[in-house]
Structures are given as structure tokens and as C-alpha cells.
Amino acid sequence: MTLNPENRNDIVSYRLEKANDTMQQVHAISRLGYWTLVANRLYYAVYYACSALLIANGIEVSTHKGVIKQIGQSFILPGTLPVTDAKLLNKLFSMRQSGDYEDLFDWDEADVAPLISQVEDFIMRIIDLIESSKGRL
Image 1 (cartoon, rainbow, N blue to C red):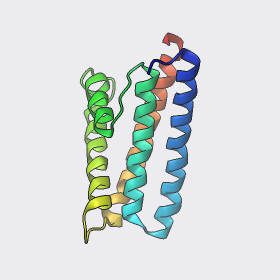
Image 2 (tube, rainbow, N blue to C red; image 1 turned 180 degrees about the horizontal axis):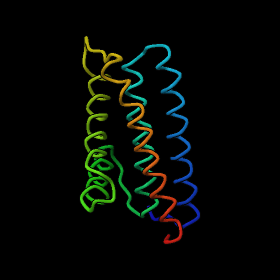
Image 3 (tube, one colour; image 1 turned 45 degrees about the horizontal axis):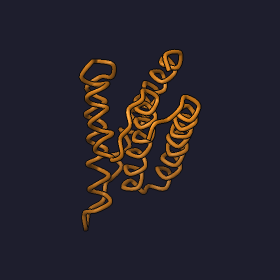
Image 4 (cartoon, rainbow, N blue to C red; image 1 turned 135 degrees about the horizontal axis):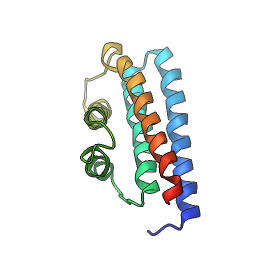
């Protein structure tokens, strides 16, 4: 699917809004103590932001693993984003997979709560990259 600049900007804005809305869910759900669900929402917040970054840069992918791979190749390897972001993205993907699909398994506060601020920082780096690239699109 080839997007014109207006459609691309609309989708990027929508995905960033979804990332923001999902972070609001993270904060509300964390107050209730549903840490497996918080881990799920943290992953999706980063996923939406990463997919926005890819779209903003004309990189189209259709799977979660494709997003992870392209973030690594296009932004981690060149040093645009730190390696710690790749590690966080992979960790969140694994946590979501475990929490969603493994029986008799739940994440707890000690595992998940420290990741909230890391995700917020990661998303801010993505927003900064998107903002700085707007003039080049």
C-alpha cells in the first residue's frame, strides 16, 4: 500500500494518538493491579508508536515481528535509537506473548511497574524523531 503524504501524516497521527491512549490505559489499569494486562498495554503503546515511526519514514510492514525487525534495522543499527530501546521492545513483546498465551502465568508489579517510565521515554524519543523528520517527508 503506497500512501500519499496526507494519508501518511493522518495514519502517523492516529497511531501516536493510540499510543497515548494506550498509555492512559496503562496508568488506569496499574492502579487496579492487573499487571499482566499492564504489560500487554505497554507493548501495544510501544507497538503503535513504532509503527507510526515506520510509516512516517515510508517503511511499511504488516506483522508485529516485522515492526520489531524494521525498528532494529532502520533505527537501532544506525544508532538513531539506543540499543536499550530494542531490548525493551523485545522484552515487552515476550512479556505480552507470555501473559496472553501461557497458562498459569501472570506478571507482577515488580516485573512491570519499572517499565512504565521506560516506555514513556521510548515513546517520547519516537515522537521527537517523527517531529524532526516532518520537514523531510
